[in-house]
Length: 187
Image (cartoon, rainbow, N blue to C red):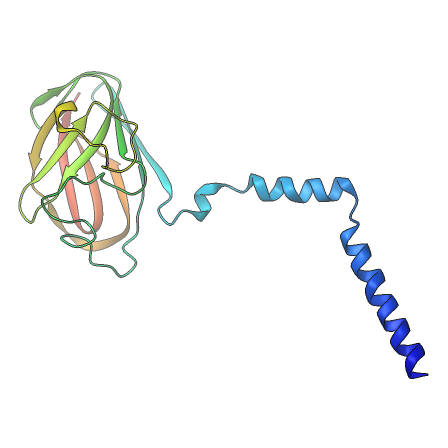
């Protein structure tokens, strides 16, 4: 009796395994397609974001990866002072403007730029580099800068967990952790 019961259980188990492996081709393809179609951005700890707006007659688009604080010390640690920063995570942040503009009183021609910064406890350098598509700041080349301006960071009343850019009436503002870094734009 025990042998018959054991034999039946083994047969049922083998049958269950073979049924599970023998899915119809349609069903298996659909499942694989669904997995492949899942957006890669969900897996990134610093997802891609975009800020768009208009200042004067100039349309501005900023594409960046948005890191989060996640309990870390940001300024002077994760983002060191005195070193070129990609101003976000992953690929370098890009700044695109449809018309010539004035940034902090200095002319920037219409086009697409890599947006870098050099943070410090006092003034920050905001850099518009003519090579927009690069990974991080690894290949940053100062000789390719179109414009550099200095700005003063401001302390925020409420911290911002995920880094963000905003295009406002006459300025662009980077906000992250306890800092806002605005720069004036005239279109």
